[in-house]
Length: 158
Image (cartoon, rainbow, N blue to C red; front, top):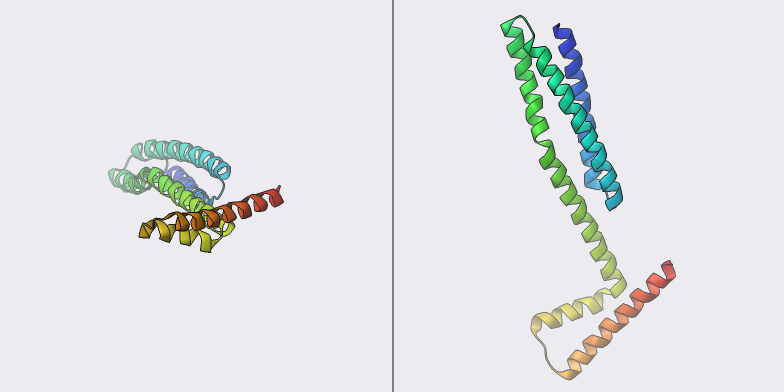
């Protein structure tokens, strides 16, 4: 086994790491749960391929006759293994970021449909702890108005 063969494995490992970084970025930017799911499947496939490549490179490095070459190759391989071990955490963070973006987008859309003035006035009334039938009736009318706008907007979309 030559160090050139190991170099081939290392090049493949680097290529897969770059592909994995790109997929994780795609995962983080996914606005649709279905798209996120598809990207996650691709991430898993690349992880499996990378793991196999790491194993082949490790065997190749261990078969080197020279102790110094073997040590050098195993040290390089250790760096790749550390990066590989961190992938699952990066995937989880990307999924959380994507979900937060989707939730924020939905909240903004909901606020636009309900009308910011109505929504803010309902929230401020809750915070002040207002009571009284008149105030409650006024707030109820504002909420009803917002719901009617929402219904009309949804009907227009269909």
